[in-house]
Image (cartoon, rainbow over all chains, first blue to last red; front, side, top):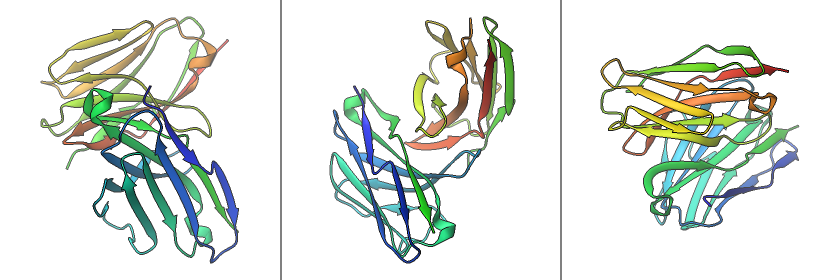
Length: 118
Length: 110
C-alpha cells in the first residue's frame, strides 16, 4: 500500500515551454502533497506544500508564478513549470501524506521526474 | 527552525558487516523521525520510522534508535548486502513539516 506515482518520469523540452508533472496517490487519499526539487548528489529541497482544495504554501525563494501547483482532488496534485529555462532542469519529486497511512505525518514519495530544459 | 545534520556523508562496508548512520536535530519539538533509501534515479523509499515516544524500533536487518535527550537518532543495518547500496536520508518532522539530512551514500562491497 501507500503507492505514489508520477508522470512523466522524464521530460526534455525547449526553453520557454511549460511542463506539467502529475503526482497521484494510488491507494490512499492524500490530504497533503509536497513537491521537492533535488539537485545531483544533494538532499531534497521542499518547494511547496499543498492541501486538497486550497492554495499551495510555497517555501521562501520559490516563485509561485513559476511553479504552479494544483491539488484539485485527494489523489492528484500537479506541478506546472511555466516557461521553463535551463536553470529549471532538475529532479522533481512529489510526496503524499494522509490519514490512510495510519499516521498523518508519514510521507510517501513518488519515483520522481527528471526535467531537462534545452 | 529545525536543523538536521547527518554523518557520514559516504560509507563503505564489506558485505555482511554492519552500517551505522547518525543524525542529530536541534528542535526538541520534532516528534517523528523517518529514514528513506534512495536509489539512483528514483524517489526516496521509506524504510523505517520512529516516534518520539519510542527509543528503538527494529524491522528485520534494519533498526533505528532515538535519544531524545541528546537529540540524535541512528540507522543500523546489519548483515549488509550489495542491494543495500544507496543514498540514505534521515528526517526530523514536526507538524507535518519535514527537515531532511544531507544524505549518506552507502556502498556495500561484495
